[in-house]
Length: 198
Image (cartoon, rainbow, N blue to C red; front, side, top):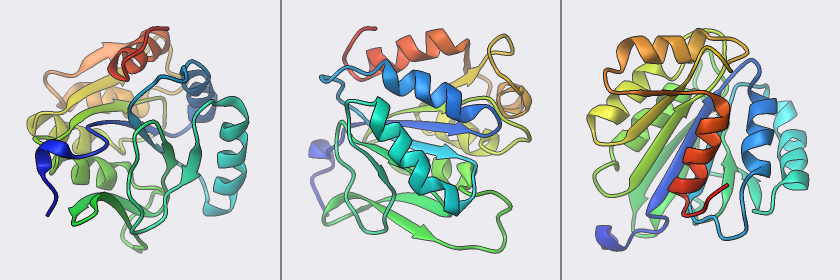
C-alpha cells in the first residue's frame, strides 16, 4: 500500500449532474486556470456512445487534459476525468486508481451514488469536494450524504441556478451540513479548492 500521507492527487472534486449538466460543466471547466491543482471526476448522466464526443468537446474548451475513465488507471492532479458505468476510486499499490464495471442493477450511466460512495472510503486520507448539480431524480444524494459523514465537503446547487432542481433538492433534503450555492459561487469554490482564484 502507498503512504497515505503522500497520495497524489491529495485533492479531488466530484461533479454529479444530469439534465442541464453539460452547459454547467462547460462553464466550470472554462473557468480553470493552468495552475489549478486538483483532480476532477465528472459523473454526467449520458449514454456511453456520447461520452467520446463529450470528452472531445471538453478538451476543446479546457486548459487541462480531459480523459474518459479507464479501469486500473491512476488518478493524476490537474487532470479531469469523465466517468461511465459504475466508476469507483480505489487505493492500491499504485496509489489512487479507477475501477469500472457494468451492472444491470443501476438505472444510471454513470451512477453518481456509486462514485461518491467509493470516494467516502478515502475521505479521511484525501480532501474531497462533492458537488451535485442540476438534474432530474435523486442520484447522488445518498452518496453525498455518506461522503459528508466521512469528512468530505459537499455542495448542492441552489434552486436559483439549477435548470432542473431534482437532484440538488434531494441532496439538500438529506445531507444536514451541505452548502447550497448558485453555479457562479460553485465555480469560485472549485477554483479556490484547486488553489486558484477566478
